Every structure is written in C-alpha cells, then in structure tokens.
Image 1 (spheres, helix red, strand yellow):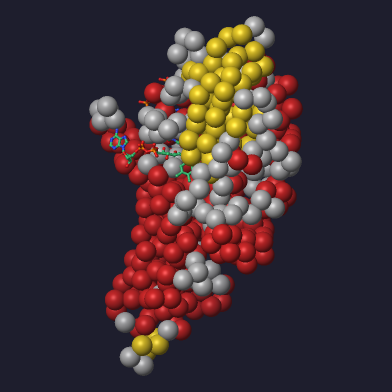
Image 2 (cartoon, helix red, strand yellow):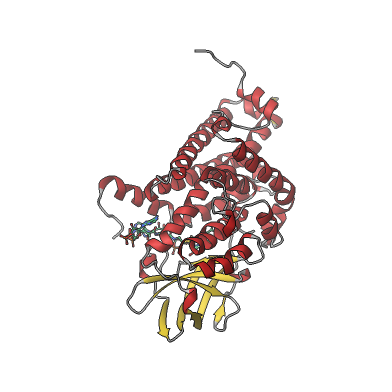
Length: 401
Ligand code: TGC
Ligand code: FAD
C-alpha cells in the first residue's frame, strides 16, 4: 500500500481546506464548480455582514436575489421550472457552503427551494407551476412553508387549520407558528385540513384579504433569519391553488425529506467554519509560552472535531449518492439530519472553548453558529423525533404515541 506522508496541516497550508478523507475526489467537476462558486459568494456577500445582521436580529433581505443568482433555490429541480437542473449532491454542497456562512442564510434557501418550489413542482397543476415557479426561482417572489401550529409542532397530524368548500374557492381559517420568512413572503405553501379531515396543500398569496404574518421577536437563535406567524381569517383560496392530488401528511413530510437532506449537508458547513476558526486560533494563541494547539487537551478537541466532520461528510456523500438513485429513505435522511446537526452543535461548543473568552464575542463565528444550531436541532423535526424515526425504522414499533 502506497502511503501519502504529507501531514494534514501541510495539506491545509497548501490547499486551504479541511478535506481529511479527500472527499473532493468523490465529487464531479460540476459539484466542485457549484461548491466553489457558492463558497466565494458567501465569502464576499455573507461573511462581511453576517455578524452585524445577526446582532441586530435583522434579515439581510437583499440576499434573496443574490441567492437566486447563484442557483441556491432548488438546485436539483428542473431548470424549466426555475431550478438548477443539478443532482442531489450539488444541492448538498451548495447547502454546506451557505451554512458555512450562517444557518439562517441556508434556511432562506432551504425554505424557498425545498419547501416552497418543491411542493409546487411536485403537487401543483401545470398552470400553477408556470405561474409561480419562475418567479420563485429568480427571487422575485419570496415563499414560506406553513405546517407547524401553536399547538401542533412535532405532531403536525393534529393540525386544526382548515378549509371549507365555498363554490369556486375554499375558505381558509387557522394559524401557523414559527414560519421562516413569513413576514416578508409573497406567498405561502399552507397545509390545512379539508372537511373530510384530509391534509391538503395550497398556495396562498400574502396580498389576499384575511392573510397576515406578524413577526416573532426575541429569538436568540437564527437571528439573521426572519420568522413569523401566519394567520388566516376567512382567506378565500381559489380552488386552482389547492394541490389537486396529494392528500394526507405524506405531502408535507415529503417536502421535509427534501429539506432535511439539505440540512444534513448544511450542518457540515457550520461545523467546518467553527473547526477552521478553532484550528487557526490554536496555532496563534500563546499561553505558557506555547501555542495552545500544542497542548494535548486542545489536540483532543481538534482531532475529535475533524474525525466527526469526516464521518458526517461520508454520511452526507453516501446519502447523496442514494438520493441520486432515488433510493434515500426518509429514515436514512432522518439519521443524517440528526447526526450531522448534533455533530455541528458539539463542534461549535468545543470550538468556542478553544477560543477562550474571545469565543463568546462576535469576532469569531462559533457562538453565532452555536446559537443557530439550537434551532437547526429543533426545526425540520427535533433531535428526539429523528431518533424515534430511526427507532421505528429498525424495530417496526412506533414510540411516538
Ligand atoms: P406517519 O403515519 O408516520 O406518516 C404519514 C404518512 O407520511 C409518510 N411519511 C413520509 N413521506 C415522505 N417523507 C417522510 N419523511 C415521511 N414520513 C412519513 C408515511 O409513509 C405515511 O404515508 P401513508 O401513505 O401511509 O399515509 O405520520 P405520523 O403522524 O405518525 O407522524 C410521524 C412523525 C412524528 C415522524 C412526523 O409527524 C414528523 O416528522 N414530525 C416532525 C414535524 C416536523 O418535522 N415539522 C417540521 C416543520 S417545517 C420546518 O421546520 C421548516 S424549518 C425551515 C428552515 O428555516 O430551514
Ligand atoms: P414540540 O413538538 O412541542 O416539542 C417539545 C419537546 O418535546 C421537544 O424536545 C420534542 O422532541 C419533544 N417531543 C415531542 N413529541 C415527542 C414524542 N412523541 N416523544 C418524545 N419527545 C417528544 N415550521 C414550519 O412549519 N415552517 C417553518 O418555516 C419553520 N421554521 C422554523 C424556524 C425556527 C426559527 C424555529 C425555531 C422553528 C421553525 N419551525 C417551522 C417549527 C419547527 O419545525 C418546530 O419548532 C419543531 O417541529 C418542533 O415543534 P415545537 O416547537 O412545537 O416543539
């Protein structure tokens, strides 16, 4: 067996990245091009401003158009419907690079692409696709996804938001909670029960009478992403806006599978940003006349970080390959979302420790990523819900209720 004796630290100096198992070799030229383009966009457009927006708890709305320009909305949806026409691994590496910048920026793209464009592409009539998808793909319209309710988070099947038949339209009533982008959205993909109790999906425009989307304030996490409620007070939804075929929870859950897949990749980006910062700091910060990176306890942290990142990268890459073959199961996606987000949160905490007191300031990204990742651990299915999905998958026994 031939052995490459160049140390990783020398490779990092040479290539300026932390690709410990040379996963780049598993990526195609298109994947690398997409990844590098998004990486440099993030460096240019996100990194210089993100701490300030996060501190002000303000969404950098001007980035919605830029995200469209770099193809971050629906990278794996067909081009004729406003997507990027790429594969699932390209979608994954794009999410990774966005979340290296900030989980809130990745959220902007996840919601628009996977939770708004994807259900319209998959479930809406051809007319509705033509009407909404190009404008969403170009960032002219901003969308949001309303599933969670004040009293139904982990258990969306219990939702009470409802539609009633009224001739050529349905009348929509109810409320949704914790909705990313809702206060700035032009339209919402909303899930509500019909008179038979079946969950139906629909596109609801924010300009319609009876629609409101108050902002939720006081978030200590995902502060650069705007979050709100959705309130429907007798909103008249034309029948053509209701997805014709899909009924039941598998409609919204299949959108979640798409978005959770992207998060499994995205979390790696946040972890890499923290690891990168901690590694650099450990080489520069001198205590007891030595760089702190020379102490075994610091090395343990860094060695475990890169080990966990590498395992997460391999999990994401394999999941991406399965997804490309149409073989990634919802439970496999849950495992990767759960593992990779928890991995990133652990790394953010360890990286923060390596920075000592400086780690709690906004001069370094670890604390912001850590706070963001508390949301990422919770949304799109909590850490424990994903564990129960895996438990159900391996035992065949349902422990949800
Ligand atoms: P259950 O009986 O298991 O399933 C109902 C039907 O759905 C099918 N299914 C799925 N299909 C596609 N993808 C998935 N991931 C699926 N999971 C289940 C299932 O086969 C069944 O189909 P059928 O044909 O038999 O009807 O449903 P349940 O009521 O027992 O619920 C199971 C549970 C708890 C796992 C599910 O409710 C769940 O995942 N809860 C978590 C809720 C959640 O993740 N909410 C996320 C809201 S959106 C969000 O957070 C966006 S954040 C955006 C951002 O800013 O990035
Ligand atoms: P709950 O469901 O009340 O859970 C509370 C705790 O109980 C959790 O620890 C959970 O794991 C545990 N728990 C619940 N059920 C069980 C069980 N059966 N067994 C064991 N433990 C259990 N939703 C949308 O629809 N669209 C969005 O765009 C969106 N964006 C979001 C943005 C942010 C910033 C946040 C914070 C949330 C967002 N959400 C969105 C909502 C998110 O999906 C929910 O917060 C999440 O699904 C959990 O629901 P919950 O907050 O009601 O918690």
